[in-house]
Image 1 (cartoon, rainbow, N blue to C red):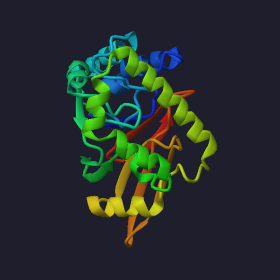
Image 2: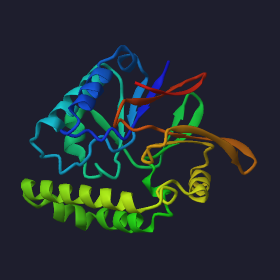
Image 3: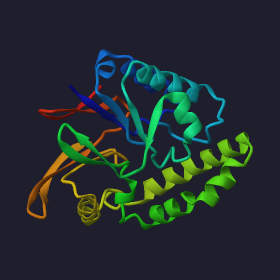
Length: 239
């Protein structure tokens, strides 16, 4: 019995070897025998809409749908790079969409599942940008643009993100401990799994007098990273 978690693959045509690694991992016995696979956001470097006719979205859909067809549920939480993923692609890819902040029972342990960007509350510029682009009006306006225009907009957004990251202190871009604690209190949990920060680790701490745990998933820039949860515990390792 095992449940698998991945995030922050940032699949992109510029790193074809990571796309191949993703496809091979999803075809592995570990995935095909799992109780479930969770993808906690930023599966791609940029998502321009479910109508994208490029090769990469088709390869992703084929890989995830094969897992779904093998009888393994594939859950997906949108990240800051792929928040425009919609129901049409989810259906094509065999994904079950989850709201950011869903609580699922993992072998008797209620666990809060998030992408993780909303926890980085010290990064005020990013949080302001996030609030803007998550409004229904903004998303509808962007998705109404021609596909080429959306691709150009995504390229511009990636460049601005790199510039912001290069000029912002690393501590500001990490999660805020008070935000983590408050979010876990509101969800009534002592276990949290998230990605986004690209700082894989298992953090154990005390929350209101109770033992608590926060697992941060790794990215897939140089290699794969997976969290394997079993009834006996949690293992965070490279793929």
